[in-house]
Length: 284
Ligand code: AMP
Image (tube, rainbow, N blue to C red):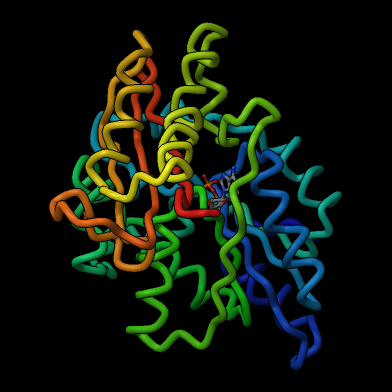
């Protein structure tokens, strides 16, 4: 595996591969876990060349969020990338990625208004701008993203469609710890007690699924089943917990009608740490 830091070195390394090689891109913010590695392994299976990036992108953090304390492990991450079969790893500095007078943004409207976009109003513009830059720099045939960030995946698919990026977006299932906690770099912030409390997210989704299995189809009832579980956890504070349309991310709880498809989505503060999770709850 080759690791590069400048844009020139990245372009040169990419130019050294066969012109007709299929390139798979896996963008990450590092502190890698099995969730990230599942994307890299899938890319390894499907592509001739696997490019991974590790960049804690400042523009997708809100003021006062955890940009400065975001966990990092450059050496451990490089070893994990090499083991997962990455060919080329780009680990740029912030000053490499953004010019001091950087002034262009890519924004997706509509899909970014609710859920995470509500409490993090600048987040998705930061994501779509950096992902556009990564697409332009690496020119991948495919790019791999996790369903853990379900709204992000939907927003990136929309951007790719609307801006005609010639890239297949591959969405990969959420990788969980054995007890159900969705893997996240931010889990490193949790104390032992908080780590246990963090299980309320996956348990809330299970509760909605159980209600569905018992025949409940009214979105607000399914949502309340989720909220009850989180509200019972003293260390947890709901940012949002909703039942949405899996395609449009539209809030389904406004209409008091039975639904055929439903996605449970939630963001919950456990102490200071904001965790997200989601699941289709319409599985048979
Ligand atoms: P991040 O480093 O948090 O920006 O995540 C980089 C990529 O890994 C994104 O596409 C995430 O959706 C994906 N990812 C993060 N956690 C998981 C997980 N537990 N399972 C699957 N994919 C994940």
